[in-house]
Image (tube, rainbow, N blue to C red):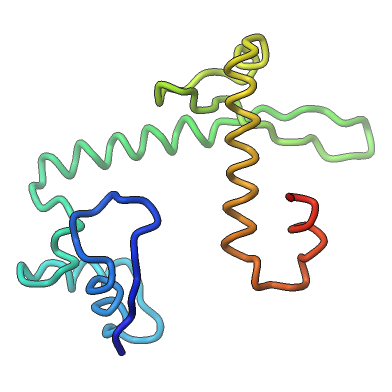
Length: 144
């Protein structure tokens, strides 16, 4: 099978179609570990998607972990005695790629507008990803 894929975001210097075909060649049910193992081959197109210098890769992974830490910190807003507390993300990314507490973002009109735009973009992305599921058509219509 020859898939004509493309990258949603240009993060990789590899041919998207070739990468998709290499992944498809691994079977119907592919794990990330299988993809990395296949990509170890220097002649694989997928090889171009990974950082093979261990020191550089370790630092990139720590930065990824830092993002996971800051994005997974929440506070719980009490909703009354009968309802479970609502989890609220404590930090959000601002324009310069840094993270800031939601309480401070709300106080800055420009940063709050950016957060609203990011929310809308995330909803639109969710809609694009799952728009073929007609059971959620009411939700897709609301996003519009």
